Image (cartoon, rainbow over all chains, first blue to last red; front, top):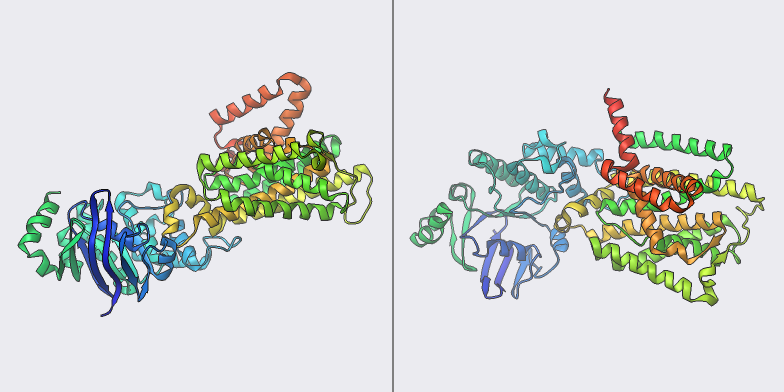
Length: 250
Length: 314
């Protein structure tokens, strides 16, 4: 496996708080990498830097052999990196179907001023994607009428509609009811594996990490404290004390 | 019945009523041509409203269109050439200014447009040797596609042109709003950042709508100049921009017919109010706007479409 995303020496501080303090991380093509760590450890900051929302003060990020450090989000998306958000970022006045179609349009060409957004080809592609996510029954509902779990899935479905090679997900299961969590993640993993998407996801649920991640990176105060297979990393007493203990009591 | 179909049928019905009104009451032709011109300008504002942006300075482009006609008429005295020329000048101005203002949102977007329209107003007022200041410029008699027409026939020609343009722009705006670009305007209103993370430039989406709105306002200005045959800096004054926003609220931003219904209602209320209570027509218009804001947020179009929806459901 080769590195699809490679971060070297990333540093970023907000005032005196070091959100990234020398991050070195390679994400291998095809893997599912979980990022765990206490709140404020810099997990979201890493996603924000990798997707162009924040520019690191030092260090480089390389994607598929090309440096993307500090490039704008639009350019990074076009290169094949998509993201979903901790708080779902849906177009609230549009239906779920329209949200997905807008994502497809963004990928396929938005500057077609007279053909409708819900043209047959995009509608069909959107319906197929929504079906895979189990969202077809809510396709015609406005995004602001959905419950949190459904919004979360729709948010990820929008990112998948961009057909990325790498998907960065910020807490994909937060807000999802505990009883639905495993089913949601199973659906998600199945869809992403089928599409051959490499995934990085920030997660607080260790059961999810243990079951679905190929590797896990432990974030602590802007640094990677541990990296490896879940069984090995999660068994580390320091990780159990400093991260899992906190996560379980969070 | 789908929204575009309902709009198309109602649009044709309104067009037929306008023709009948103009035929039965000749002086009405002037009022309705101005109303159609303003409706076209407001249609452009509606595109921006879809993105949640209100321009308080779009009279700038109406004035640019009107003054283009006034400046060019001595050398190109033909309405068929002046109309596209005015639209082109307004489009170019919209592209240039849009590059700047499309970076801003909400109150900054609105006030920047207002400021620019007032700068243009001052230029028209101060550069007397070019613009004849507040006296304005008289537009000479024009031919229409090479034909010399008597006054009444020319007025009918301008009225018909305004009507055809209103229908064409209405159909275009409906298709545009349903297209990815149009829907992306709504996305700017609710979650602009997400568009960036989908690889789309919100600024470019807004700029496209801004240029289209400038072009429409430019056409409106040309029609106003051809109808009134006299252009003054007041066309660019802030109250003229406010009037366009007033019409947008009165007509309703929910459909492409709203701007035209609003403009017709506005002009008719103004004409009749001014004729009956000369000193109080602004107060009557203000009261109408207040009633719309309090009891009919969707404007005239909102009332009509709700009624049509109930009818269809019955």
